[in-house]
Length: 542
Image (cartoon, rainbow, N blue to C red; front, side):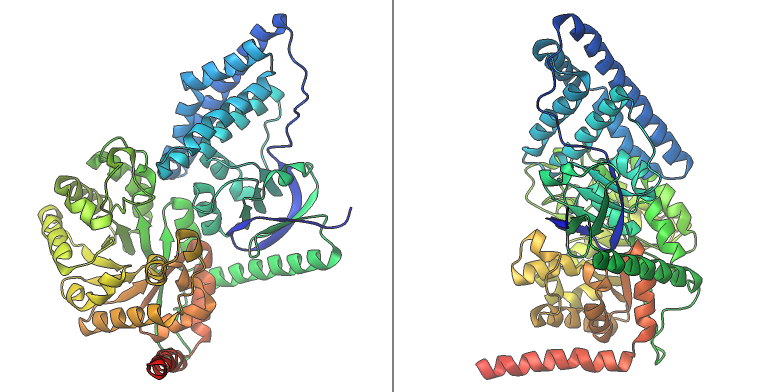
Protein backbone atom coordinates (compact mmCIF):
# COMPACT_ATOMS: atom_id res chain seq x y z
CA UNK A 1 0.00 0.00 0.00
CA UNK A 2 1.34 3.44 -0.93
CA UNK A 3 0.80 6.60 1.05
CA UNK A 4 -2.76 7.35 2.15
CA UNK A 5 -3.33 10.94 3.27
CA UNK A 6 -6.25 11.64 5.62
CA UNK A 7 -7.36 15.24 5.90
CA UNK A 8 -8.58 16.76 9.15
CA UNK A 9 -8.18 19.97 11.14
CA UNK A 10 -5.04 21.10 12.94
CA UNK A 11 -5.61 21.20 16.70
CA UNK A 12 -1.96 21.46 17.83
CA UNK A 13 1.08 22.19 15.65
CA UNK A 14 4.09 19.98 15.02
CA UNK A 15 5.06 16.97 12.92
CA UNK A 16 5.70 13.53 14.37
CA UNK A 17 5.57 9.89 13.41
CA UNK A 18 5.31 6.62 15.24
CA UNK A 19 3.41 3.39 15.62
CA UNK A 20 -0.34 3.72 16.09
CA UNK A 21 -1.79 2.95 19.50
CA UNK A 22 -5.44 2.41 18.58
CA UNK A 23 -7.97 3.11 21.33
CA UNK A 24 -10.99 2.83 19.01
CA UNK A 25 -10.84 0.40 16.09
CA UNK A 26 -13.41 0.09 13.33
CA UNK A 27 -16.67 -1.33 14.71
CA UNK A 28 -17.78 -4.82 13.74
CA UNK A 29 -21.39 -4.49 12.64
CA UNK A 30 -21.74 -8.26 12.13
CA UNK A 31 -21.08 -9.32 15.75
CA UNK A 32 -23.08 -12.37 16.77
CA UNK A 33 -26.28 -11.95 18.80
CA UNK A 34 -26.12 -13.39 22.32
CA UNK A 35 -28.46 -16.21 23.30
CA UNK A 36 -31.09 -15.42 25.92
CA UNK A 37 -29.22 -17.59 28.44
CA UNK A 38 -26.02 -15.54 28.00
CA UNK A 39 -27.53 -12.11 28.42
CA UNK A 40 -27.87 -11.87 32.22
CA UNK A 41 -24.21 -12.82 32.73
CA UNK A 42 -23.12 -10.39 30.01
CA UNK A 43 -25.18 -7.56 31.58
CA UNK A 44 -23.55 -8.19 34.94
CA UNK A 45 -20.14 -8.07 33.29
CA UNK A 46 -20.96 -4.69 31.78
CA UNK A 47 -22.16 -3.36 35.15
CA UNK A 48 -18.93 -4.55 36.78
CA UNK A 49 -16.92 -2.86 34.03
CA UNK A 50 -18.61 0.48 34.73
CA UNK A 51 -17.79 0.12 38.42
CA UNK A 52 -14.17 -0.70 37.59
CA UNK A 53 -14.02 2.30 35.27
CA UNK A 54 -15.29 4.57 38.05
CA UNK A 55 -12.61 3.19 40.38
CA UNK A 56 -9.94 3.65 37.73
CA UNK A 57 -10.94 7.27 37.17
CA UNK A 58 -10.90 7.89 40.93
CA UNK A 59 -7.34 6.52 41.03
CA UNK A 60 -6.25 8.78 38.18
CA UNK A 61 -7.80 11.77 39.97
CA UNK A 62 -6.02 10.85 43.21
CA UNK A 63 -2.70 10.58 41.36
CA UNK A 64 -3.29 14.01 39.85
CA UNK A 65 -4.00 15.51 43.25
CA UNK A 66 -0.86 13.99 44.70
CA UNK A 67 1.08 15.61 41.85
CA UNK A 68 -0.45 18.98 42.74
CA UNK A 69 -2.79 18.98 39.75
CA UNK A 70 -6.13 19.58 41.49
CA UNK A 71 -7.61 21.37 38.49
CA UNK A 72 -7.16 18.36 36.21
CA UNK A 73 -8.31 16.03 38.98
CA UNK A 74 -11.66 17.79 39.23
CA UNK A 75 -12.21 17.40 35.50
CA UNK A 76 -11.41 13.67 35.66
CA UNK A 77 -13.75 13.22 38.63
CA UNK A 78 -16.73 14.21 36.48
CA UNK A 79 -16.05 10.97 34.59
CA UNK A 80 -16.66 9.02 37.79
CA UNK A 81 -20.19 10.42 37.95
CA UNK A 82 -20.74 9.52 34.30
CA UNK A 83 -19.59 5.93 34.83
CA UNK A 84 -22.04 5.58 37.73
CA UNK A 85 -24.93 7.31 35.95
CA UNK A 86 -28.07 5.13 36.32
CA UNK A 87 -29.36 6.19 32.90
CA UNK A 88 -26.17 5.00 31.20
CA UNK A 89 -26.35 1.71 33.10
CA UNK A 90 -29.98 1.22 32.11
CA UNK A 91 -29.18 1.90 28.47
CA UNK A 92 -26.33 -0.64 28.52
CA UNK A 93 -28.55 -3.27 30.14
CA UNK A 94 -31.32 -2.72 27.61
CA UNK A 95 -28.95 -3.18 24.68
CA UNK A 96 -27.70 -6.48 26.11
CA UNK A 97 -30.94 -7.95 27.46
CA UNK A 98 -33.33 -6.74 24.78
CA UNK A 99 -31.12 -6.83 21.68
CA UNK A 100 -28.55 -9.44 22.62
CA UNK A 101 -25.44 -7.36 21.86
CA UNK A 102 -22.21 -8.08 23.71
CA UNK A 103 -21.17 -6.12 26.79
CA UNK A 104 -18.27 -4.54 24.92
CA UNK A 105 -20.50 -3.32 22.09
CA UNK A 106 -23.27 -2.25 24.47
CA UNK A 107 -20.95 -0.11 26.54
CA UNK A 108 -19.65 1.71 23.49
CA UNK A 109 -23.06 2.07 21.87
CA UNK A 110 -24.77 3.31 25.03
CA UNK A 111 -22.00 5.87 25.54
CA UNK A 112 -22.32 6.95 21.91
CA UNK A 113 -26.09 7.38 22.27
CA UNK A 114 -25.70 9.47 25.41
CA UNK A 115 -22.93 11.49 23.77
CA UNK A 116 -25.08 12.15 20.72
CA UNK A 117 -27.83 13.55 22.95
CA UNK A 118 -25.34 15.84 24.69
CA UNK A 119 -23.86 16.98 21.38
CA UNK A 120 -27.29 18.13 20.22
CA UNK A 121 -27.79 20.42 23.21
CA UNK A 122 -27.70 24.16 22.46
CA UNK A 123 -25.33 24.72 25.39
CA UNK A 124 -21.76 24.44 23.99
CA UNK A 125 -20.27 23.60 27.39
CA UNK A 126 -22.55 20.60 27.88
CA UNK A 127 -22.12 19.55 24.27
CA UNK A 128 -18.36 19.27 24.82
CA UNK A 129 -19.02 16.64 27.51
CA UNK A 130 -19.98 14.23 24.72
CA UNK A 131 -16.31 13.31 24.30
CA UNK A 132 -16.06 12.56 28.01
CA UNK A 133 -18.98 10.10 27.89
CA UNK A 134 -17.45 8.31 24.91
CA UNK A 135 -14.20 8.05 26.85
CA UNK A 136 -16.03 6.38 29.75
CA UNK A 137 -17.68 3.90 27.36
CA UNK A 138 -14.37 3.04 25.72
CA UNK A 139 -12.65 2.49 29.06
CA UNK A 140 -15.43 0.22 30.28
CA UNK A 141 -15.41 -1.74 27.01
CA UNK A 142 -11.64 -2.18 27.37
CA UNK A 143 -12.19 -3.59 30.86
CA UNK A 144 -14.61 -6.17 29.48
CA UNK A 145 -12.20 -7.10 26.70
CA UNK A 146 -9.21 -7.20 29.02
CA UNK A 147 -7.49 -4.65 26.80
CA UNK A 148 -6.65 -1.97 29.34
CA UNK A 149 -3.03 -0.83 29.06
CA UNK A 150 -0.65 2.04 29.56
CA UNK A 151 0.68 3.81 26.49
CA UNK A 152 4.46 4.19 26.60
CA UNK A 153 4.88 6.02 23.31
CA UNK A 154 3.33 6.19 19.89
CA UNK A 155 0.54 7.99 18.08
CA UNK A 156 -2.82 7.77 19.84
CA UNK A 157 -5.62 6.96 17.38
CA UNK A 158 -9.18 7.29 18.68
CA UNK A 159 -12.64 8.56 17.91
CA UNK A 160 -12.32 11.24 20.59
CA UNK A 161 -10.44 11.75 23.84
CA UNK A 162 -11.80 12.65 27.25
CA UNK A 163 -10.00 14.49 30.08
CA UNK A 164 -8.91 11.27 31.80
CA UNK A 165 -7.31 10.11 28.54
CA UNK A 166 -5.42 13.38 28.32
CA UNK A 167 -4.19 13.12 31.89
CA UNK A 168 -3.09 9.50 31.59
CA UNK A 169 -2.07 8.97 27.97
CA UNK A 170 -1.25 12.19 26.16
CA UNK A 171 1.85 13.19 28.17
CA UNK A 172 3.50 9.92 27.10
CA UNK A 173 2.42 10.01 23.46
CA UNK A 174 4.15 11.32 20.35
CA UNK A 175 1.00 12.67 18.75
CA UNK A 176 -2.79 12.37 18.62
CA UNK A 177 -5.15 11.66 15.72
CA UNK A 178 -8.91 11.78 16.31
CA UNK A 179 -11.79 10.83 14.05
CA UNK A 180 -13.92 13.46 15.78
CA UNK A 181 -12.99 15.98 18.43
CA UNK A 182 -12.68 19.74 18.20
CA UNK A 183 -10.04 22.41 18.40
CA UNK A 184 -11.61 23.93 21.54
CA UNK A 185 -11.96 20.64 23.44
CA UNK A 186 -9.94 20.04 26.60
CA UNK A 187 -7.72 17.48 24.85
CA UNK A 188 -6.75 20.00 22.18
CA UNK A 189 -6.02 22.76 24.67
CA UNK A 190 -3.68 20.53 26.66
CA UNK A 191 -2.02 19.16 23.51
CA UNK A 192 -1.24 22.68 22.31
CA UNK A 193 0.10 23.68 25.70
CA UNK A 194 2.42 20.68 25.92
CA UNK A 195 3.57 20.86 22.31
CA UNK A 196 1.98 17.56 21.28
CA UNK A 197 1.04 17.44 17.55
CA UNK A 198 -2.68 16.78 17.13
CA UNK A 199 -5.13 16.49 14.23
CA UNK A 200 -8.88 16.17 14.76
CA UNK A 201 -11.94 15.71 12.56
CA UNK A 202 -10.31 12.99 10.42
CA UNK A 203 -13.51 10.98 10.03
CA UNK A 204 -14.26 7.26 10.08
CA UNK A 205 -11.39 6.47 7.68
CA UNK A 206 -8.98 7.01 10.55
CA UNK A 207 -10.41 4.01 12.41
CA UNK A 208 -9.23 1.65 9.68
CA UNK A 209 -5.67 2.17 10.92
CA UNK A 210 -4.33 -0.97 12.55
CA UNK A 211 -2.67 -1.14 15.95
CA UNK A 212 1.09 -0.83 15.44
CA UNK A 213 0.81 0.64 11.94
CA UNK A 214 3.32 3.38 11.15
CA UNK A 215 1.63 6.75 10.78
CA UNK A 216 2.67 10.37 10.50
CA UNK A 217 0.79 13.22 12.19
CA UNK A 218 1.26 16.65 10.65
CA UNK A 219 -0.32 19.10 13.05
CA UNK A 220 0.81 22.04 10.95
CA UNK A 221 -1.15 21.01 7.85
CA UNK A 222 -3.92 19.05 9.59
CA UNK A 223 -3.22 15.66 7.98
CA UNK A 224 -2.41 12.10 9.02
CA UNK A 225 -0.46 9.89 6.61
CA UNK A 226 -0.65 6.09 6.56
CA UNK A 227 2.41 4.38 5.15
CA UNK A 228 4.44 7.60 4.77
CA UNK A 229 7.14 7.48 2.11
CA UNK A 230 10.85 7.87 2.80
CA UNK A 231 10.91 11.57 1.95
CA UNK A 232 8.04 12.43 4.28
CA UNK A 233 9.55 10.33 7.07
CA UNK A 234 12.85 12.17 6.69
CA UNK A 235 11.11 15.55 6.96
CA UNK A 236 9.16 14.44 10.02
CA UNK A 237 12.25 13.15 11.79
CA UNK A 238 14.16 16.33 11.01
CA UNK A 239 11.29 18.47 12.31
CA UNK A 240 10.96 16.41 15.50
CA UNK A 241 14.70 16.71 16.08
CA UNK A 242 14.59 20.44 15.45
CA UNK A 243 11.82 20.88 18.00
CA UNK A 244 13.62 18.71 20.54
CA UNK A 245 16.81 20.71 20.19
CA UNK A 246 14.88 23.99 20.35
CA UNK A 247 13.24 22.93 23.61
CA UNK A 248 16.58 21.84 25.07
CA UNK A 249 18.07 25.20 24.10
CA UNK A 250 15.10 27.02 25.62
CA UNK A 251 15.52 25.17 28.92
CA UNK A 252 19.28 25.79 28.92
CA UNK A 253 18.73 29.54 28.32
CA UNK A 254 15.71 29.95 30.59
CA UNK A 255 17.55 32.35 32.90
CA UNK A 256 18.66 34.64 30.08
CA UNK A 257 16.42 37.66 29.46
CA UNK A 258 14.36 37.99 26.29
CA UNK A 259 16.14 41.03 24.92
CA UNK A 260 16.60 42.24 21.35
CA UNK A 261 20.02 42.69 19.77
CA UNK A 262 19.78 46.42 20.35
CA UNK A 263 18.88 46.06 24.03
CA UNK A 264 15.07 46.29 24.11
CA UNK A 265 13.55 44.10 26.82
CA UNK A 266 10.37 42.08 26.20
CA UNK A 267 8.71 39.99 28.89
CA UNK A 268 7.48 36.57 27.77
CA UNK A 269 4.74 35.10 29.94
CA UNK A 270 2.56 31.99 29.58
CA UNK A 271 -1.10 31.31 28.97
CA UNK A 272 -1.93 28.51 31.40
CA UNK A 273 -4.90 26.84 33.03
CA UNK A 274 -3.27 23.81 34.64
CA UNK A 275 -0.21 22.97 36.72
CA UNK A 276 1.12 20.81 33.86
CA UNK A 277 1.13 23.77 31.47
CA UNK A 278 2.74 25.95 34.11
CA UNK A 279 5.56 23.49 34.73
CA UNK A 280 6.39 23.35 31.01
CA UNK A 281 6.26 27.14 30.68
CA UNK A 282 8.57 27.77 33.63
CA UNK A 283 11.05 25.18 32.38
CA UNK A 284 11.26 27.15 29.13
CA UNK A 285 11.86 30.45 30.91
CA UNK A 286 8.42 32.04 31.29
CA UNK A 287 8.54 35.05 33.60
CA UNK A 288 5.12 34.25 35.01
CA UNK A 289 1.57 33.83 33.75
CA UNK A 290 0.01 36.44 31.50
CA UNK A 291 -3.38 34.73 31.25
CA UNK A 292 -4.92 32.21 33.61
CA UNK A 293 -8.47 31.45 32.47
CA UNK A 294 -10.62 31.05 35.57
CA UNK A 295 -13.87 29.97 33.91
CA UNK A 296 -12.82 26.73 32.20
CA UNK A 297 -13.38 24.47 35.22
CA UNK A 298 -16.75 25.98 36.06
CA UNK A 299 -18.54 25.65 32.73
CA UNK A 300 -20.96 23.12 34.20
CA UNK A 301 -21.48 24.80 37.55
CA UNK A 302 -25.11 24.77 38.75
CA UNK A 303 -24.62 28.18 40.41
CA UNK A 304 -21.98 30.84 40.92
CA UNK A 305 -18.95 29.03 42.42
CA UNK A 306 -18.34 29.60 46.13
CA UNK A 307 -15.24 31.22 47.61
CA UNK A 308 -13.99 27.82 48.82
CA UNK A 309 -14.53 26.13 45.44
CA UNK A 310 -12.58 28.82 43.62
CA UNK A 311 -9.68 28.85 46.08
CA UNK A 312 -9.42 25.06 45.81
CA UNK A 313 -9.11 25.31 42.02
CA UNK A 314 -6.75 28.29 41.89
CA UNK A 315 -4.36 27.52 44.72
CA UNK A 316 -2.57 24.49 43.11
CA UNK A 317 -1.57 26.67 40.15
CA UNK A 318 -0.90 29.97 41.92
CA UNK A 319 1.12 28.33 44.69
CA UNK A 320 3.76 27.56 42.02
CA UNK A 321 4.08 31.25 41.16
CA UNK A 322 5.33 32.53 44.50
CA UNK A 323 6.93 35.94 43.95
CA UNK A 324 6.17 35.79 40.22
CA UNK A 325 3.65 37.53 37.98
CA UNK A 326 0.30 35.74 38.07
CA UNK A 327 -2.43 37.23 35.88
CA UNK A 328 -5.86 35.75 36.62
CA UNK A 329 -8.72 36.65 34.30
CA UNK A 330 -12.13 37.05 35.87
CA UNK A 331 -14.86 34.68 34.66
CA UNK A 332 -15.30 35.29 30.94
CA UNK A 333 -18.73 33.70 30.89
CA UNK A 334 -21.06 34.25 27.96
CA UNK A 335 -21.18 33.24 24.30
CA UNK A 336 -19.80 29.70 23.91
CA UNK A 337 -18.66 29.64 27.55
CA UNK A 338 -21.99 29.76 29.35
CA UNK A 339 -22.64 27.49 32.36
CA UNK A 340 -26.16 26.06 32.84
CA UNK A 341 -27.20 28.59 35.48
CA UNK A 342 -26.52 31.46 33.07
CA UNK A 343 -28.20 29.95 30.04
CA UNK A 344 -30.14 32.60 28.18
CA UNK A 345 -28.01 35.49 29.46
CA UNK A 346 -27.18 37.96 26.73
CA UNK A 347 -24.31 39.77 28.45
CA UNK A 348 -20.71 38.59 28.46
CA UNK A 349 -17.57 39.22 30.48
CA UNK A 350 -17.56 42.18 32.86
CA UNK A 351 -21.11 43.25 31.95
CA UNK A 352 -22.41 39.88 33.07
CA UNK A 353 -20.29 39.98 36.24
CA UNK A 354 -21.45 43.46 37.20
CA UNK A 355 -25.03 42.19 36.98
CA UNK A 356 -24.08 39.84 39.85
CA UNK A 357 -21.90 42.06 42.09
CA UNK A 358 -21.87 39.64 45.03
CA UNK A 359 -20.59 36.82 42.80
CA UNK A 360 -17.95 39.17 41.36
CA UNK A 361 -16.81 40.21 44.81
CA UNK A 362 -16.62 36.56 45.87
CA UNK A 363 -14.39 35.78 42.91
CA UNK A 364 -12.16 38.76 43.59
CA UNK A 365 -11.77 37.63 47.20
CA UNK A 366 -10.93 34.07 46.12
CA UNK A 367 -8.30 35.26 43.64
CA UNK A 368 -6.69 37.53 46.24
CA UNK A 369 -6.60 34.70 48.78
CA UNK A 370 -5.23 32.06 46.38
CA UNK A 371 -2.67 34.45 44.91
CA UNK A 372 -1.53 36.09 48.13
CA UNK A 373 2.13 35.04 47.64
CA UNK A 374 2.32 36.06 43.96
CA UNK A 375 2.80 39.33 42.13
CA UNK A 376 -0.94 39.26 41.49
CA UNK A 377 -2.68 40.86 38.53
CA UNK A 378 -6.43 40.55 37.93
CA UNK A 379 -7.65 40.86 34.36
CA UNK A 380 -11.13 42.13 33.53
CA UNK A 381 -12.62 40.57 30.35
CA UNK A 382 -14.57 42.27 27.56
CA UNK A 383 -14.06 45.80 28.90
CA UNK A 384 -15.56 48.60 26.83
CA UNK A 385 -15.47 51.57 29.23
CA UNK A 386 -13.56 53.15 32.09
CA UNK A 387 -16.72 53.02 34.23
CA UNK A 388 -16.65 49.21 34.20
CA UNK A 389 -13.08 49.26 35.48
CA UNK A 390 -13.97 51.72 38.22
CA UNK A 391 -16.83 49.50 39.37
CA UNK A 392 -14.55 46.45 39.47
CA UNK A 393 -11.87 48.44 41.33
CA UNK A 394 -14.41 49.45 43.99
CA UNK A 395 -15.33 45.81 44.66
CA UNK A 396 -11.67 44.76 44.66
CA UNK A 397 -10.72 47.42 47.21
CA UNK A 398 -13.31 45.99 49.60
CA UNK A 399 -11.61 42.55 49.69
CA UNK A 400 -7.92 43.44 49.54
CA UNK A 401 -7.48 43.83 53.28
CA UNK A 402 -4.10 45.51 52.91
CA UNK A 403 -2.87 43.14 50.21
CA UNK A 404 -1.82 44.26 46.76
CA UNK A 405 -3.29 43.32 43.37
CA UNK A 406 -3.10 45.17 40.08
CA UNK A 407 -6.26 45.48 38.00
CA UNK A 408 -6.00 45.36 34.22
CA UNK A 409 -8.35 45.54 31.26
CA UNK A 410 -8.64 43.21 28.30
CA UNK A 411 -8.79 45.09 25.02
CA UNK A 412 -10.56 42.66 22.72
CA UNK A 413 -13.25 44.72 20.99
CA UNK A 414 -13.08 47.75 18.66
CA UNK A 415 -15.02 49.72 21.30
CA UNK A 416 -12.39 48.97 23.94
CA UNK A 417 -9.54 50.00 21.65
CA UNK A 418 -11.35 53.26 20.84
CA UNK A 419 -11.68 53.93 24.58
CA UNK A 420 -8.14 52.80 25.42
CA UNK A 421 -7.06 56.25 26.60
CA UNK A 422 -9.89 56.53 29.13
CA UNK A 423 -9.49 52.91 30.23
CA UNK A 424 -5.74 53.37 30.70
CA UNK A 425 -6.39 56.17 33.14
CA UNK A 426 -8.06 53.73 35.57
CA UNK A 427 -6.17 50.50 34.79
CA UNK A 428 -2.74 49.33 35.90
CA UNK A 429 -2.05 47.29 32.75
CA UNK A 430 -3.72 46.43 29.44
CA UNK A 431 -3.91 43.05 27.73
CA UNK A 432 -4.85 42.81 24.04
CA UNK A 433 -6.82 39.71 23.09
CA UNK A 434 -5.93 39.50 19.39
CA UNK A 435 -8.17 36.49 18.68
CA UNK A 436 -11.45 38.23 19.53
CA UNK A 437 -10.25 41.61 18.33
CA UNK A 438 -9.33 40.29 14.88
CA UNK A 439 -12.54 38.30 14.65
CA UNK A 440 -14.73 41.28 15.50
CA UNK A 441 -12.87 43.82 13.38
CA UNK A 442 -12.83 41.63 10.27
CA UNK A 443 -16.23 40.02 10.79
CA UNK A 444 -14.93 36.45 10.95
CA UNK A 445 -16.46 33.47 12.73
CA UNK A 446 -14.73 31.68 15.58
CA UNK A 447 -13.06 29.01 13.46
CA UNK A 448 -11.66 31.47 10.94
CA UNK A 449 -10.39 33.76 13.66
CA UNK A 450 -7.82 31.18 14.72
CA UNK A 451 -5.85 31.98 11.59
CA UNK A 452 -7.23 35.44 10.99
CA UNK A 453 -4.79 38.02 9.57
CA UNK A 454 -3.83 40.04 12.63
CA UNK A 455 -1.56 42.05 10.31
CA UNK A 456 -4.60 43.52 8.58
CA UNK A 457 -4.12 47.26 8.97
CA UNK A 458 -7.56 47.70 10.56
CA UNK A 459 -6.42 45.49 13.43
CA UNK A 460 -2.92 46.98 13.61
CA UNK A 461 -4.31 50.50 13.97
CA UNK A 462 -6.29 49.48 17.03
CA UNK A 463 -3.29 47.70 18.55
CA UNK A 464 -1.11 50.76 17.91
CA UNK A 465 -3.69 53.09 19.48
CA UNK A 466 -3.97 50.82 22.52
CA UNK A 467 -0.20 50.71 22.93
CA UNK A 468 0.08 54.50 22.70
CA UNK A 469 -2.64 54.95 25.30
CA UNK A 470 -0.98 52.53 27.71
CA UNK A 471 2.45 54.15 27.39
CA UNK A 472 0.98 57.65 27.80
CA UNK A 473 -0.46 56.42 31.10
CA UNK A 474 2.87 54.74 32.00
CA UNK A 475 1.37 51.26 32.24
CA UNK A 476 2.46 48.09 30.40
CA UNK A 477 0.54 46.48 27.55
CA UNK A 478 0.67 42.82 26.58
CA UNK A 479 -0.79 40.52 23.94
CA UNK A 480 -2.27 37.20 25.06
CA UNK A 481 -3.75 36.02 21.75
CA UNK A 482 -2.39 33.55 19.19
CA UNK A 483 -0.61 36.37 17.33
CA UNK A 484 1.94 36.64 20.16
CA UNK A 485 3.48 33.35 19.03
CA UNK A 486 3.23 33.83 15.27
CA UNK A 487 6.71 34.68 13.92
CA UNK A 488 5.61 37.32 11.43
CA UNK A 489 3.11 39.01 13.72
CA UNK A 490 5.23 38.91 16.89
CA UNK A 491 7.91 41.32 15.67
CA UNK A 492 5.25 43.73 14.38
CA UNK A 493 3.50 43.68 17.76
CA UNK A 494 6.77 44.45 19.53
CA UNK A 495 7.40 47.20 16.99
CA UNK A 496 4.02 48.72 17.84
CA UNK A 497 5.12 48.99 21.46
CA UNK A 498 3.77 45.82 23.08
CA UNK A 499 5.78 45.22 26.28
CA UNK A 500 4.77 41.63 27.08
CA UNK A 501 3.86 38.53 25.06
CA UNK A 502 1.81 35.81 26.72
CA UNK A 503 1.92 32.52 24.78
CA UNK A 504 1.11 28.81 25.10
CA UNK A 505 3.50 26.93 27.39
CA UNK A 506 5.18 24.99 24.59
CA UNK A 507 5.90 28.22 22.66
CA UNK A 508 7.61 30.16 25.46
CA UNK A 509 11.15 29.13 24.54
CA UNK A 510 10.87 29.77 20.81
CA UNK A 511 9.25 33.19 21.32
CA UNK A 512 12.01 34.19 23.73
CA UNK A 513 14.56 33.17 21.11
CA UNK A 514 12.78 35.15 18.39
CA UNK A 515 13.03 38.24 20.58
CA UNK A 516 16.79 37.73 21.01
CA UNK A 517 17.25 37.45 17.23
CA UNK A 518 15.40 40.65 16.30
CA UNK A 519 16.30 44.35 16.39
CA UNK A 520 13.77 46.60 18.03
CA UNK A 521 14.61 49.57 15.80
CA UNK A 522 13.99 47.45 12.70
CA UNK A 523 10.65 46.22 14.05
CA UNK A 524 9.60 49.78 14.80
CA UNK A 525 10.36 50.84 11.23
CA UNK A 526 8.59 47.83 9.73
CA UNK A 527 5.50 48.35 11.86
CA UNK A 528 5.29 52.03 11.01
CA UNK A 529 5.79 51.23 7.32
CA UNK A 530 2.80 48.86 7.39
CA UNK A 531 0.63 51.59 8.90
CA UNK A 532 1.93 54.29 6.52
CA UNK A 533 1.49 52.16 3.38
CA UNK A 534 -2.06 51.28 4.35
CA UNK A 535 -2.83 54.91 5.08
CA UNK A 536 -1.42 56.00 1.73
CA UNK A 537 -3.46 53.35 -0.13
CA UNK A 538 -6.59 54.48 1.71
CA UNK A 539 -6.05 58.12 0.73
CA UNK A 540 -5.52 57.10 -2.90
CA UNK A 541 -8.87 55.28 -2.96
CA UNK A 542 -10.53 58.43 -1.68
